[in-house]
Each structure stands twice: as structure tokens, then as C-alpha cells.
Length: 100
Image (tube, rainbow, N blue to C red; front, side, top):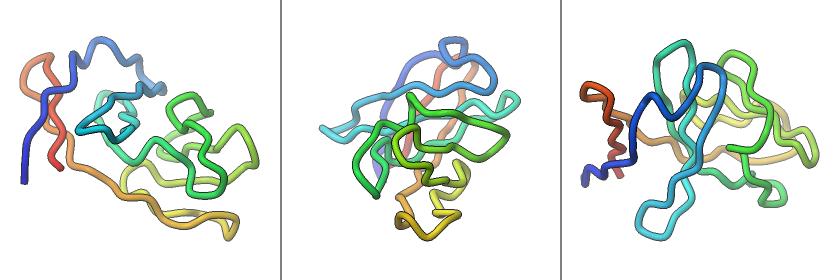
């Protein structure tokens, strides 16, 4: 497993997300009350960016067609789409890393 530096935790406000590109793959990192989670950034239904979608608690709702995903696991919560890959986020001070 490889560890990749993303950026700073302070760049992502609580309840928000930010997209990072790691090895050519779009990954969305979510701040849920100071804990960080990462899943594929592209909705498995039609490819919308989830980092630009609405987040409530640990659920992100795709802005295009309403597919919902658990940001902690990537699990799809309704039948419109399929599960996404999740990634482990490691925080060291203010720096964030993702394991792929």
C-alpha cells in the first residue's frame, strides 16, 4: 500500500469535501467533525463529482441524480448506483495522507 500526501486538514472545513488527484484518480476527501474520510470522487451512476455534492453527516448526495454514499465506506445507500472504493486517510498534525 502506498501513502500519498494530499494537503492540509485546515483546507477542508467541517461538513465539506475537497477533490485530490492521486496517480491520475480523482479522490474526494470529506471532513466529518474533524475526522477525514476518502472515497472515489466520481459517482458510479453518471460520473458527477462527489466533492462538489451535498454532504450531511457521513452521507454525500450526488447533485446530479440523488445517489447517496456513506463517505466512511463508499457504500451506496440507494439502488441508483454501485459502491465506491474507500481509502484510508491518515492525519499527521495538519497534513493529510491517503493510502492507496
